Length: 452
Image (cartoon, rainbow, N blue to C red; front, side, top):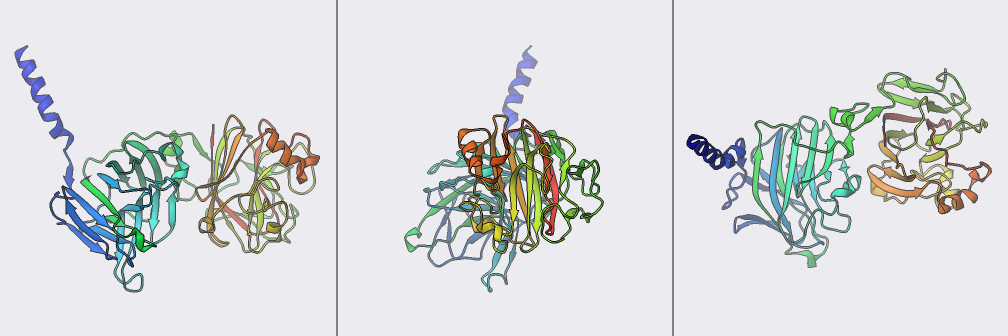
């Protein structure tokens, strides 16, 4: 019995040391040894065991970068932001181009966002100096209120191969699957300021540690949406969350022509992992015609990538029943795909309700130009239909509209739209997903769905 007690006491005493196994500090609490400042003139000092970054006028984004680079790791640290007007970030797997930004130097790569503004995107993933937003935290609203201003917050980033996950104050936040960078440095950012009155704003980092050995996946809810930039693939994490591919990148399996028993013999093409509508004369369903999923869905989360040719028009429709047996494109709720600049349909309808990502002819998508990728570039659409019939449209990770199917407001909009001739339009309990042939060149890939 005495031996057992001694063993228990030793175990309790040693367990903190065991928990630290594989970790090492990136900051000694006293100096900036192991770090280098690049790309700007903001000030970095050490005060009371923390690195303190201070904004200065006339400087671009400034970075304090590690002299070493890291591939797979778990990074943990604490960060404090002074007030809600500040903005910062933590780079990881990042790089430095000394000749970039007209010789001033350019940092590029993944960034853990620190955003205390009303937008609340802390722990989202940004691609500094390159692709812009990869994982806006609007994709995980449950984590948006975790950052606290004026106190230290716990940050965690895990990189394992192509999978990146983030946490804020122990709350799982973002999941990204991406192949752009397998390794790179870690950096602390002091953001540039637009007004001289913002000079002197400070941010604090401390207890910066990293684990590069014995890295295993930490618990992370499969219900959290994952952004996967690798075309036509699903990770084991996504599969565990219930996601399925609707297009495998190779075949027409799971699709057929609308009002047909088989896939169209012309008008569509699969090449290099892309499902394409071939251009004809710009008319609805006069070449290959629309295609629909063979399965029907009720509540779901649908994601898809699309690329428009200049001036193109198309759409992704849902709750398509094919009961109308009409000529032209089949009837359904439509996520509009449109070149808003060149196609005349953008100026028709009511108040812009025929523009890109809108609920066609019913509700306008409210979007910022910076989040729209122009024709010739890939965009990413998302439609979420909850079991209670609440619906959301997203464009490149940003929610652009929401509504409730069957509500009085919804029926009022239908009553003044082109759909008023169809009884109970948009209220079917289930329906097909449809990709529209509008006679313009449009490409699709990475079409995936999760039933809710």
